[in-house]
Length: 190
Image (cartoon, rainbow, N blue to C red; front, side, top):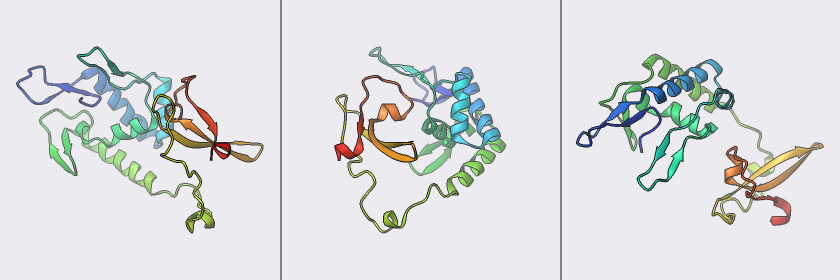
């Protein structure tokens, strides 16, 4: 399935991509927002405010995928995909593509530099106990799933200065509001 902004060539005998003008505008908006704001979470919030949506694909079976509001990870994937400057990535190699670029090299380079600088910033503080390999904060990570097979992900909240840990269905972490998603207290579960 081609990424946002491009579609397969209409001639099935030609293995190539063509730019989807409407989706390309969404891609340019995401790049412009990140170039302006420099923060994935801020871009996600602004993209949701203006109603930007991911690529929608209808399979031959009738199943529909996509067309949702962007998550932070999806925005990062768009910003890192060289397809938008007319190139194709295969494994670790990047090759010149046969399709038109959607964003300019200058915008691409600025965004990549900002992403690189943001990833170099230290995130949070590790306590001495965690650095020495003491008891993991979420010992059940990756071991539990809910009734739909969705992975339970550790998360937490702060209430009255106390941290309260939970394991929640992954679809809830991604910004979903599925009422059937699980939210279990970590201490009791562990």
